[in-house]
Image (cartoon, rainbow, N blue to C red; front, side, top):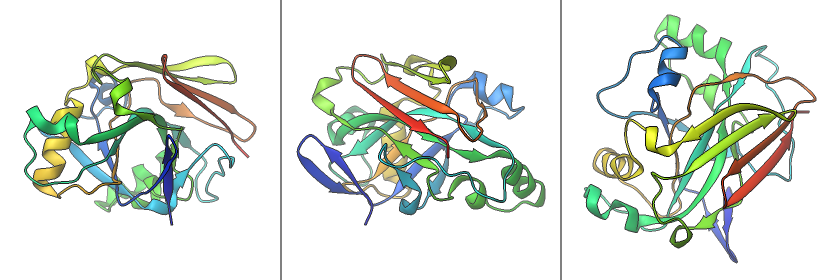
Length: 216
């Protein structure tokens, strides 16, 4: 059973929703268009990885990229949630990595196939400890960053999202329904790049939480 810790509570993870192309500069760096509505894909709960385990790269890929993101934990589910009420459904926030086997993704896209092999391998959804939602006054006024071997790779500002956290929650609730324990990976800024065996990855959600992984 996949689970996350929030304060003293252990919460079972139900679904892992991910939002693609939610920062214009990241879409541009990969040559992708900006979408008119949230681009949603899923990761299996078996992809979840906390700091107690290293990152293991899949044997079928030679080009796994880091994608650092704000992650949202849903505490109260629902359908047809209005954007104005969406943040009241959030239990916690963290910082994570949507790891992507870019070569496998490119091969799948060229054939019109789903991205699951590129996005859903074991350990492809790294996640820090979570902080209670009440400690975050406004999720659109957060900065986060990723350093690889001490060098800054990604610096994100949630105010640059194309679809806000509230809009994402509302859209997901209307389209799929949301459950308590769902995670939302809210999109990555520019600066994605390959990771290699031996790399040290340090993530931080400024003033809130940090996380560290080593690539095996």
